[in-house]
Image (cartoon, rainbow, N blue to C red; front, side):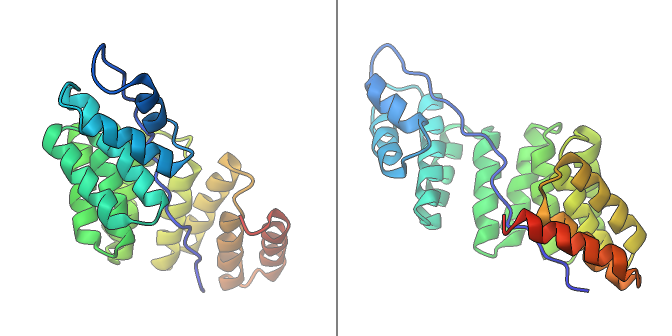
Length: 228
């Protein structure tokens, strides 16, 4: 049974830097915070980062935003460098830890990713996103028990997140527990009926159980939903 993994997305919101009375212009702050045009964001955030009149917190936020802009340009090394600098200015920036962890994972370094997600959890233990992110990294290391524990904690913290059920379903399937996998895919689909991957993976589970009619129905639903 071939389980399809969703490509993880950053589930950490971009923070907003507030313009101080003096320092970088309001336009620089607007450009840094807009999040749509990475080049515009990099220019605006750089102006804030280089302005000594800005507070350390504002500069840290600008560094996180600039890191996200670099990631849009597929420059993960510069993104990570900006998250490093943000954490030098504000060692408690949960967004910087989460986003740096995401990019370490994208570079294939799951150990460093797990370390960053753990730091985010230490500072914000009620953040379900950090547990999902760490669980995905545990799954990539084939540490399935730790992965299930993290996805389960994320669900305890916020039962609305279908993505946590989807990933826990993948891990149950990898462990050979198809009934639990199907139950989690059911919950994922209930929360996000447009999740084609959940239908596909549930179809794989039904096929592995020998229920070809249900498998075919799920594959059909996934096909109708399209590549997204």
